[in-house]
Length: 349
Ligand code: NAD
Image (cartoon, rainbow, N blue to C red; front, side, top):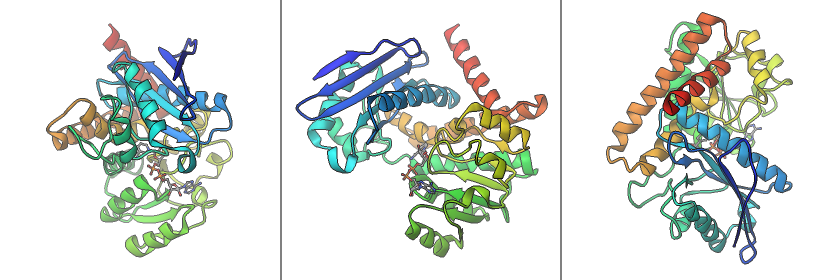
């Protein structure tokens, strides 16, 4: 296996990992260990080329620094990506090679599931390294993070509703939900229980039909969900959905959801603000997943207590961000970034 260090000014350490025997080509990016060991999932995707994979690792690891800091976790930001189709190219030997590369970092980077990976894959990686979380069993195993992610998003939706709609009571509110996967499905159930009416869209029509039956959800086509009239939009599918094309057509009062990197660019957050659409910064709203994973990394025995406390803190952080944004007429994503940088500067002092 060849591990090559890639020169970087933006990150602490970036590695290219190649293993001819297993066909592995991966990048591990450690953005920051200022607050603790870098933590962030392992993604496997058929990237167009190595540059695209490297870019993804750099962008996502940077995002993890912000997410972990916003959640008040003693963790830095990192991410790993494997080039390849998980359905075709994933093998135990390849995952074990990744495990050896993670192990060579001696705990500076902790990996976990991301797109294309599941708890069974983490169990294979764990044969080669202790620095892996999101396992189904083992010491302090944290399993699927999605239910905790969804709980955190529900809190964020209530908080955003309090600020924008005057009440966190979701009874009778209309929520447009994009994506009914691991997170979106859990969130749909929680919103239904909270009395909200759902408008849903997913590429998988069967999931929409099940949601219609289970939650009385109104189903719309995937190309309509970003322009339906609703109180709140909850993006829970893919990144970049808030962009120059979609923001002008939104007919909601607020956006709060689970997808990572919802804003295509920071300017799209400014455009939301200019339109009076209150945006709950994604990395604050969706921190439940990493909070769940952190219980395994930090070997927390009282998992339920830790998760409840940290979810409460994440909601308080969002509340403070939205309060300051309103008081100073600022866009919340700008306030969120400033809040995180101030936390990191305090920790460095
Ligand atoms: P998932 O793959 O289980 O679900 C995604 C769903 O979105 C799928 O059902 C897919 O069919 C649907 N989808 C894809 N493109 C769509 C489109 N254009 N319109 C409508 N539906 C579409 O993923 P997930 O684990 O539920 O994660 C969803 C998002 O939340 C991702 O952005 C992920 O990075 C983020 N996130 C997840 C977690 C977690 O705990 N799983 C934590 C934090 C953030």
